[in-house]
Amino acid sequence: MKKVTVTLMVAMVISMFAGGAFSGVTSLRGDKELTANSDESDRRKQVVVRGGMERSYKIQPPVIPHKVDKDTINLKTNTCMNCHSEKTFEEKKAPKVGDSHYVTRDGTVQETISSRRYFCDQCHAPQLDAEPLVNNQFEGAK
Ligand code: HEC
Ligand code: HEC
Image (cartoon, rainbow, N blue to C red; front, side):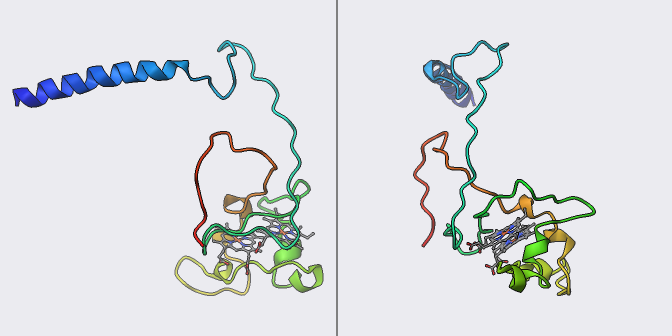
């Protein structure tokens, strides 16, 4: 038991020193005083890609390849469905929402979209042309 306690203490001391090594890292908001406001971030344009964007893995919710700033999703309206619903997609030349969007949580297939899939932006996100804040080596599954 004693040995375990000593090992734990040594580990704690080491991690305290290791923590100190990170204090030289600059925060993403720069060297601002805690009480100062951050710089206003750049206004970036939403990326518009004809034909949509490649998915990183098979069942990924596809990202939104068009502007959405005029769209509204609330209890009364869902303007996404003006184009993506079973009634409108052909005329609007838009892809119909996935078949999974009509299935309720107990597996029943409905004529209209399931409430589980009503708030589109829970899963689908528009994209901005921006460098990642932190570099990473993520690669999509092919
Ligand atoms: C004015 C019609 C219209 C509206 C409104 C609209 N979309 Fe779209 N959407 C399209 C069209 C057309 C495409 C196909 C674009 C292309 O492939 O070039 C598309 C593509 C998409 C895709 C990509 C599908 C894929 O397989 O890659 C997603 C996701 C999407 N829209 C989600 C949304 C969401 C969420 C909203 C509401 C915030 C919305 N759309 C509002 C017309 C619309
Ligand atoms: C809970 C997550 C979730 C929500 C909410 C959701 N989707 Fe999806 N969506 C997905 C996933 C996952 C896929 C890919 C698998 C599939 O087709 O079901 C997808 C696929 C799609 C596609 C491509 C279909 C195809 O055949 O390629 C469109 C278009 C789309 N969704 C639009 C919408 C719209 C519009 C809404 C809101 C009314 C919405 N989705 C809500 C998860 C979601």
